[in-house]
Length: 173
Image (cartoon, rainbow, N blue to C red):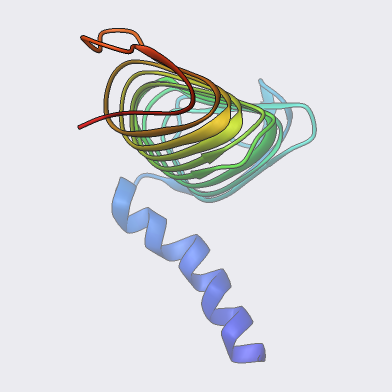
């Protein structure tokens, strides 16, 4: 069991560094930006913890806090009240509010999910994206275009030729 824990810690701290490059920092501790170990221009490759607000260039690994912002690319697990990614994201966002400006591949499981492009699964009260490929499961699901399935009370694929709104289930392939 102890070896498993050590292996998990090593994976969190070392593997993301390979993904982002040698100049990335292994840990970021923050009260709020700019009161954090490294400036927002630095890449973080292991663990980012904050009490109020943290911001970094690229982030790979585990991201835990109240408000987590990534200016570039995100790879890993994000767990916060509010999480935003300006670039692309890969992995799992498990926040109250999750916003990705670019493309997200993986799982978003938040009360409110929003992406430019979603490839994977969105589970939340409100799921919104320009384009999704996969599954949206929530009370309200909205997409401009889709290659997948929506399950919820309100399902909208606005650029679908017929039946752009359907309750319970909507799809486009």
